[in-house]
View (cartoon, each protein chain N blue to C red):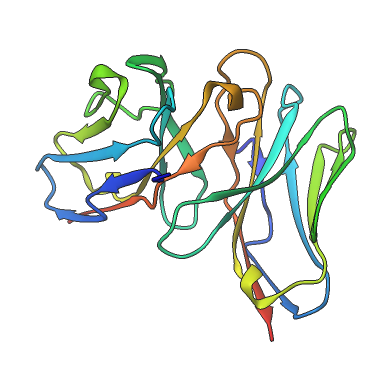
Length: 113
Length: 116
């Protein structure tokens, strides 16, 4: 049962344009959401997160939007740079105690120079 | 500050053999996690240690997998006997206790296990 879904396995964007990566979740108990970025032969690295009490969180070129009613979040990268080319994982968890993090399948972003 | 390290980086074994993966978390991180990713699929949670205790092992596939964290420092994940479906990349991650709410974890580079 895939509780965090990233339906686009890949995305290509021109340098300087906006990249939009989407994620859907099914578990309404999730209230904390994260994006991780992964380069080949490396482990994932934390990128940005958002709590369910917010609908937007911004960090430099990266913005995450959360639509709780639709159980949908998205990561916007503006402007996209070639160094952003990586696999992006959406993840979610419940707050309280030691709750595990549930990851999606990842979206491979290619930023074309 | 050294990051999370994993050994070996790659292991190729035959079905029925035993393999032990090692993870050294960031110093001072009480929380240690094991994950597995099969090609193209999600990063799947296996288990979570808090210091030397298993907090959650709900993701462990079966009793062929044994994880230990003696002394609350490094951890090992043993697969015995290995099966073909155990192939994948095994990630270890660690976090400070203050990050357990946010879920922010620091990942190692992974061990690629191939069972032939």
